[in-house]
Image (cartoon, rainbow, N blue to C red; front, side, top):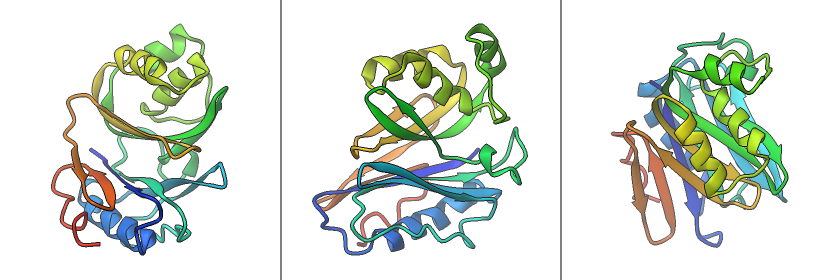
Length: 199
């Protein structure tokens, strides 16, 4: 299974977002070394940085004034990692925002959902159907996220970040840790928590 992680900083209080995201990525590498990616919003636009390398070789390259980041380390189960469009996170636009999504787990009914809703994409992963379901509803809100989570079958946790720095955590049966600290919130898959409290 993959690793997902992220940080939400309160009012620019975090001294070095890049360093913390880099450390969380390296902790997540035990859950996947095929690819690494991050997403963040800058001046209202979602930015995605991802590559088919392990977190040990990946530079998240987060600007200092960014307040929220989600990240993903990939253990490939479906879709060629050398085709970067298969790697997480992905970005999409809906009527109320632009968002990025990353997934941990394995979905079993992605092909059925793509056929049912006539979804087309060159992206080969099971995970991408979650993005397609949100796009189908043309909104990012609790109602569309509920629709997505109740439509899919399998194991999952998602982190979703929009261009207004709203962070959504969706947990199925995959484990997830959430740390609420004085200056930030950290989220991660199990056993990746040693760096959340040190910055």
